Length: 238
Image 1 (spheres, rainbow, N blue to C red):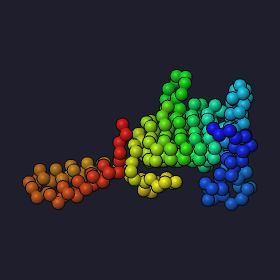
Image 2 (spheres, helix red, strand yellow; image 1 turned 90 degrees about the horizontal axis):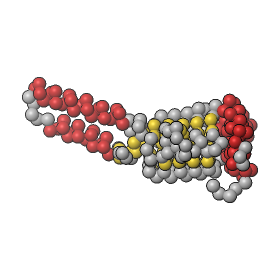
Image 3 (cartoon, rainbow, N blue to C red; image 1 turned 180 degrees about the vertical axis):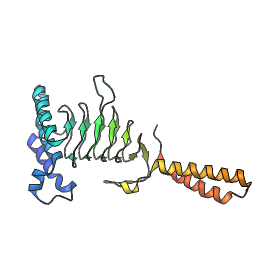
Image 4 (spheres, rainbow, N blue to C red; image 1 turned 60 degrees about the vertical axis):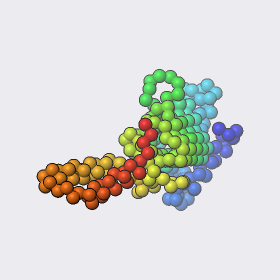
């Protein structure tokens, strides 16, 4: 992290709300309706205490914060500048998580681990990432710079920079990516598209078997178009 004072970090955390949330109308709202901002405020203090060896006190501060905000941030996590936790209820950020600058995190997001071993076991989230509501990013993986994670996705593998990941487990898709925002209305429904293709394929084969109709070229072309659109929308990263 840049060499910046605690006060400057906190000031940025509060000021970024005016850029990231069009719903804000006044400073009074900022003080009373933004648990994500206040969680980061207490995290900044607890993190400094944790680094100075006052780990029990740091955990106590974040424990009290969790009671009032519903947001669980381990004080040992490393969180960069101008991070915005929108709404925030249910957000969990694990001990060895590393978050870069200008990251946007929505409610119910988990940055968690999949191992009980010591060492790095939580995600690294690089600069400019947007993580949609309910997404689970699990394990010692890296979410690349400016990547987008769709709502309710479960990410267990690295996501390349400047890409969008969606689904359970998450896969990188070519649709729904717009630099600077996460366009959920443009994301493909992977399961729907695949089942649509399979159902139409079975129906076509059944029709050919029962009727003996061999003139199926037009229907094959339509079906192939659906399948090609499905493949085009996805880039598997296994």
